[in-house]
Amino acid sequence: MARKACGGRRLVADGVTEPQSGPWAPFRFSDFRSLFLAAFSSTLASRALAVVLGYEVYELTGNPLALGILGLVEAIPSLSLALYGGHIADRHDRRKILRITLGGLILCCLALSLLGASDVGGVKLTLLYGVVFVAGIARGFAEPAAAALEAQVVPWEILVNSSTLMASCWTTGAVVGPLWGGFAYQQSGPAKTYLAIGCLYAISWAAITRITPRPRPPAPEGESVWQSVSEGVRYVLSDQVLLGSMSLDLFAVLFGGAIALLPVFARDILKVGPSGLGMLNAAPTAGALVTMLIASRHPPVRHAGRNLILAVAGFGVSMIVFALSRSFWLSMVALMFSGVFDGMSVIIRRAIIRLFSPDRLRGRIASVSMIFIGSSNELGAFESGVTAAWLGTVRSVWIGGLLTLVVVATAALRAPKLRRLSLDPRQVVRRDEEIDRELDTEGVESAG
Image (tube, one colour):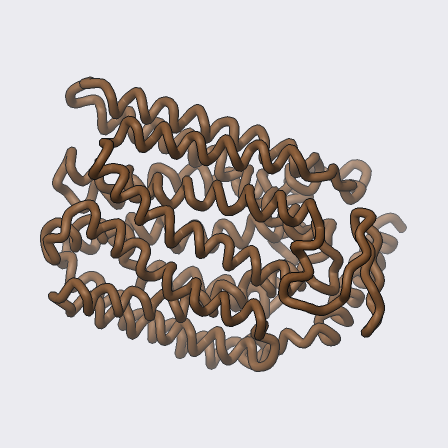
């Protein structure tokens, strides 16, 4: 992919000449359009799948701890394999990795559909967990490859625009997915809904096949898997901006997230059933979508670090309000505002990872990010289930919101580079060039 980096000039990638500026410039590239469709379809599928699985598991057990275990069953393989998945993404065709993993997810949906249509008695929950475990394996390889491929399909100079559009794509799918999943489950039952979700994964698979193959960065001779993985981990740990932004998300969502407990709120506290659960699941992403649509025209360039810290604080306050609410509509508003704040943090964190990662390390840095995010989401779901069983559902959520505010205050004090971060393109480009020079120098010294 050829690229030029001068103000006012025109960019060339995949044989297409494009204007440098403009929020919709990435859509001029066919590979970006294919990746956008693949991301939307897979997000729609994954978020609908989460709603259907969560409600079915809670219907089978009536126990919030079972929901926590559901998140843990997926987290164990996906997080355990994430670092190796990042190594694979930096050494093999990222398109091929995505085709294989999406194929695995299609098979998982077929298996879930068969389980939903059959009566297997007391082992059904165990079988559901088993299929989710396999899906977690696929995710461990898919996410690092997808993040690394995303940074390759458009020129560097419009990467902030493409990152914002992809975040909007994910959010749109995450809004529609839970709504559709909840209503489909209520109207058609689990078996047909799982089958439809598999069709969405098939659309994503077809879109990925249309993307032009990309060159892979050359691997150092004699480098072991352990050395390769360690390089990505060391790089993140040595960078205050990367480490600070990932840690902020990890601990804030680990303590403050309540998504795993929404089936409890929907059935026992707000009493709105599966369709209400779909609306509750969609509310945060609806708020995030509003934020991202605004950001597509006004990317968060100035004061990005300060805005990230304030956004996570707002997320914590929203969770406290949600926990204390007994009104369905007030709960919806609180969740929507949590999405507004989370949307801003997602945009900034995605831009940081895409812009501050050298291409040769993109897969491995994305895998480290996946561990942080996965720990906050899936392990956070397990933590939510355990604390809800111990303290009660409502109390566990508002205490988590308070802990989120403590995390934000700590990050603001301990990570000054993150607090002062700007995403000005000129500064980011200079930093990327410095990173490449540093890595090249280290390679020469190692060879010597």
